[in-house]
Structures are given as C-alpha cells and as structure tokens.
Length: 465
Image (cartoon, rainbow, N blue to C red; front, side, top):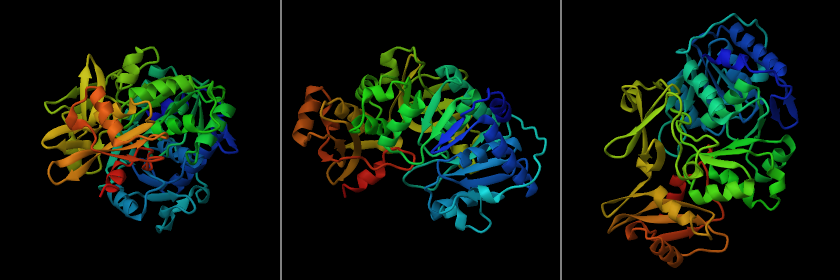
C-alpha cells in the first residue's frame, strides 16, 4: 500500500488539522496540497526528485509532505532548529532540486530557497507511485557527529502507519497532540501519517509548553500523546495541572531514555490514561510497543514487542538487531548502509534483552559506562534512582576518572533534595551492585534537551569537566 492510497482512503474530517487559530478540514488540506504539487510540477520537479524543507511545526510541513507524495517527489525533512553547518552537510548528501523554508529559518538564506506562499500555479499531473519508490529522506538527531540521511519508501511508511492504527485502535474519533517537529520520525508518524490514514484530528504545537498543552488537551479533547518522559513530567508538575483537565486522554506512549517503571506508574495514576513504553528509531519507527490490553507489567516494565512482520534479536554482545516491513531501505551514504543494514537486518546500536518476545532496552553502546573494566548500563542506574520517592527524573552519565577510567555520575530532579549519602544508602537498600552506584550526584531543576525532546546526555556530561 503506497502513501497516496493510504491517505486518500481516510474518511473526510471537518477538523483534520488544528494549529493555533487555524482549523483545516480534509478538503481544505487537499486544496493546499494540490496547489503546492502543481507549483512543483510547474518548476519541472517530478517523480524521484528531492525537495528539502526546513519548517517549524506547522500546517505547511504537512502540506509539503503530502504534495511531494502526490507526484512522487521525495521530501527531505530538515529539522527546524538545524544550524548552517548541519544544513550544509544535509544538503550535500541529499542534493535536492528545490529548497522550501519559512521566514527567519536558516535555510531561507540559501540561494534558490522559497517559502510555501511563494510557490503557486501549475497543474497536478496524474502520477502513480510504487511501494518501493523512495518517499522520505530524514536525518537522525543527536548531539555529536554528522547527520545520517535515512531513506524510507512509500511501502515502509504506509505499513508503519497502518500497523500503528491497528495496534492502537485509532479511529476518526481520536485527537492527537503533537509538539514534536514534523521533521522528526515521531512527528511524521503521529501528526501526519496516522491521522491522515484514519481521518483523526492532529493538534499541532509550535513549541512545547506544559501550560499550553493542558489548555489544548482540555479544549480539543486530546485522546493520545507520544513523546519523551520530559513532556509528561512537565504536565504533571505544572501548577495548573488537575486530573479533571486531562480526562479525554486514553493513551500515552513514551520512548527514549528515562521511561522507568516508576515514571510510568506515576503518569498512569495522575493522567488517567494507559501509559506504555515503545521503542523505535528513524530507521525503524516504533519497532516494538504494546496493545492497550497487554499485561500492565509488560507495558511499563518492557519496551514492548514486535507486531505484524517485525522481528527482533540480540547478538552475543546483547546488541539489538531488527527487521520488518517498516525498516528504511538504508542511508544516503552507501558505506553506512552496508555497515548497519546486513542481510535485511538493521544493527540498532542499542543494548537489549528479550524475554519471551518482550524487548527491554538496557542501554546504548555509546551510553555504556565502563568502570574499572566493568560495563554499566546507564539505564539500569537511572531505574534505581527513579524508584526513589524523592526523585522525579534521573540521567546517568560517565565521568572521567584517572584511577578507574570512568565512574558513574548522575543528574537528578529532586525538588526536596537528594545527596550522595542518600544515593549510596538507597542503592545498598535495593541490593544494587556497588560498582553501579553513582559516585557523584548533581541536582538540577530541569534537564537540557535536544531538538527532538530527548535529554542531551552529551551536554550533561560536559558539565562534569
């Protein structure tokens, strides 16, 4: 099933997208999509060509995606906060035929760039696409290293959207709140693909703000949200939070670092929704998750299980490999593709365990702390810390040590205080190995985050020097 068929089969919705004071119906969005598709065609841009865009969370971003897919053009999604150096690397890799930007965005200063408003005119050609045609180039986020251009096909994206709808029982009655950039795989899947597939309403936020999110949840009847724990901790800790303001929520799905059982239990109790963990990446979106009726201990104690045609396995070093219909076809860089995509499997770079098909991410190769030759999972340390009643959230990182090589340091959010002595006593009480017990505790009011919403671990580690 290609994207045009998937998005065209959804029922019409009088309020398909909401952003600020703008509310668009399916017909409104189709009109904007056709106008841009015609403009691209008038410029000689067609099947297989690439169009790069740097746009904030906005309706324009949805229009660019859908206009490109309508005529077989490949959108190249550039993060709205990407700076000139990142943009230069991305454009060099992707070689787009056109650049679309927003006023004030760095990309607009590139010669030949245009805004959506500047592109108009032209007829929409009759066009058919195949499942194996390229449908997306999206760059992976991170705090260091050059961006990696991930290439998805119409088939991989359409499958993932369809599978998400089936697993979670989404319908046209659902409403999703999405503050993540639409150049992030979570934003693409949950604000563009899934709502487009079932005619659900997508409510966009230009920038995450817990108070504003509470207002939108209450006013729009938001039924599901997807994001890192930092979003939901912000909701629950907001001074204007009340349980009666979030009664419409039925599902919260979290991925990334910090999704501990204690966080999930707190969020489920205070937000009144099913809270579950999920695991995925730009290369393999939501490869594991849980159904709403799965055992609670599996939903909050693991990162879920694969559905449909997806598979997971771990190698002798506990490295996770995945494969399935949602898997990207590779990277723009063929050398990176051959290194990470092997015989249909993708090497994730994450460490994991699998218990009767249920996946638990135990760390990332880059997040592994090696203390005196002992391998320590940052995730394991964080789970012990977040089980303490005084701690709202925790991040464990490595701190250089002349004698040990590395030692465990932890940043914690604990409004009533928490010190190293309490930490050592707590880890001893829980029976944790002494060598994984943090040897330094730093208190913060909030964690720095990357543009994707994930905690900036590299930024935290840099504070220790």
